[in-house]
Image (cartoon, rainbow, N blue to C red):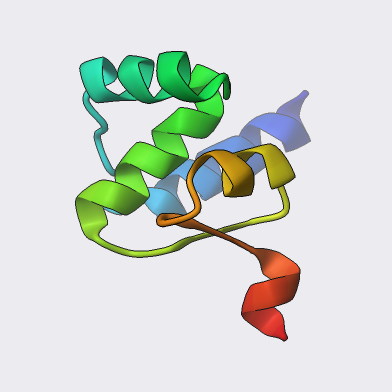
Length: 77
């Protein structure tokens, strides 16, 4: 447990100041219209807010959001 807590604290310290907030309303709208989970839709919403492509291995996300998401194998290829 002590080692796990040290790793969590270290990870939190390294990520501090690099988090992004995503509004729940757009996330739920994306999830409802796409059939994707709210968890996946958070990444889509963030990518849309940042005006960047979301690189993912999740084919459902790629199919639901072709203007936002790109498959990893297409991105790397």
